Length: 68
Image 1 (cartoon, one colour):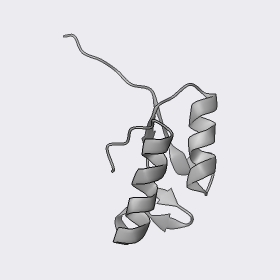
Image 2: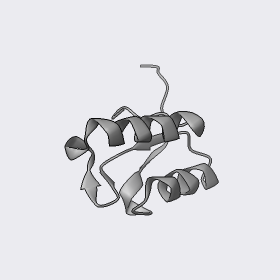
Image 3: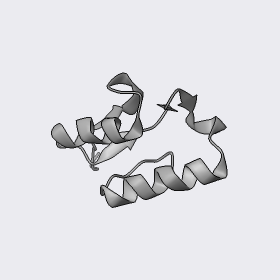
């Protein structure tokens, strides 16, 4: 069996704010992030406008998430 493996962290375990979550992942050298909670809200309850902000921040920081 062959394939690629990506190291990713569960973002809310290191910080509450997305900017801080991204910073911590970058410090670890990770470009993949799993989003559960951002600013105290679960990703599935995020409204469309906030979702766009999240997607934009991830793109600006060259981060990839299967959640966005």
